[in-house]
Amino acid sequence: MATRPIHRLTAVKLKISQLKGDISSSRLLGRGNLMLVVPESPPESLWKTIPDGARLRKLLAISDTKPVKVHRSFISHEGKACQVLLSPTPAQATQFARLTQARTLVGKLMEDHPAAVTVMLAGLEEDASMAMAEAIASAFYAAAAVMPSRKTKPDPAPILTQIDFVGLPGRLDTKRIKAEAGGNHLARWLTALPPNELNPTGYRRHLEKLASENGWEFKFIGEKELARKGAGAFLAVCQASTERDAGIAHIRYRPGKKTAKAELSLVGKGICFDTGGSQLKPFKSMLNMHEDMGGSAVAVGLLQTLTEMGYPEPVDCWLAISENRLGPNGYIPQDIITAANGTTIQAIHTDAEGRLVLADTLHLASQAKPRAIIDFATLTGACVAALTERYSGVFTNREHLHPALISAGKDSGERVWPFPMDEDFDRSMESEVADILQCPTTNDGDHIMGARFLSRFVGKDIAWVHVDLSSVNHKGGLAHVPTSLTGFGVRFIMNLLLDQKFMKKLDS
Image (cartoon, one colour):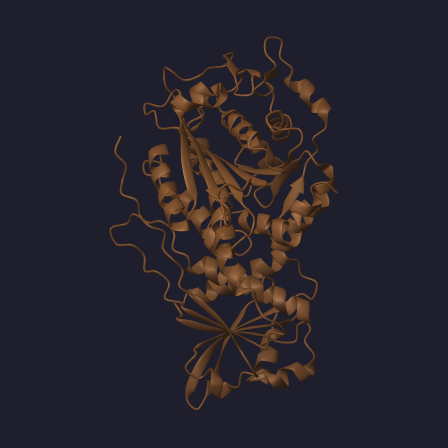
């Protein structure tokens, strides 16, 4: 089956600078747009430092019942005008709230297609000022990123090229902001591609191109090699496909010696389209199932971010790439499947395919003996039912990591919540004819059951975190991201690795 030509990811050409000194009316001339963020209850003295402050103070007092208050006005000087978006921010705002406020402000400014914007944060505490500036910069990058379009006349791309911050008490880490935005954009971009383009063959071609551009080592373990490895769980899922193009992509990031062992492995579910198999999904449930590879897209986006940041440690990335099609050769309930680690599985529901492809992928990743594995998957509707699409669920075989996971979610604005992993949940998956049921016949706690199932395929001496991506799609955007596809996970894991010192906490 032929695939459409690969369309390259559109780069975001956005420069962020920090200006010294106060912004006067005369310095605003020619800039055209000012974003002004102040405390909810600013002192009177603050307005004397802001151009046209007396009038803006009165504007701020106008009642506004919206969750994010935004007032639009103009500063006039010598016959020229500068648009101002004025917004107050709570002193104790969460980073998620700051990112949400930033998305609202940036969205209103982008309606006017600006080429340059000045951002002034006035009267905020130092930590709040820097956190808000990071949120605004991230929101600008997210809004400037062009998503895939196959229109014959595409919508015009944003022309924004310059963001100038004034009055910041410290230096923004623009390298990290840009790298995280690029990884998030890549995750969203891949997930948005249509399923007749990003089928397993098309996905492999994209990954080979990304590997070449980033200096990664790339290997694709196809179905014949997987059969030799005894990966019956993965092969059960792809056997209904008419094309024999499924497989597990293994990408190696090696900043130093090529032979170095990776202490960290990233694993992603890459189901390019999920029909549900013989237990066919209904219309609305199937409509966006090209997004079922969102976990693998986050893993790739994260790897690109780490690469751009010059992360000093080697990292492996394993992606389970397949489709879950309906066909006469598809696996069916009550089949007995044998995974690569020898575990026999009693098939129950063909729409629980994600845990099957991940089972063999986690086993292969474990054989490389990393210290930690983090997997990403759009695994269960039960996690959406438990958390909505605002949070994602996390599970780990190292309970002492829960505080770090929660803190990483709060600090990054990509919020997560840990679920229990007690062994007695396994009683619901006991089988009379195999080692384990694929899933229980009820949907009770299926996000927990899915995690318990996956845990059987991770080496006992390996710290493991499973991210059930209930936040992969949130209508209208989430935090700083303006598109329904969120790319959730890149910022979260970057915070976990760099700020929470995840790798150092594994054995504590």
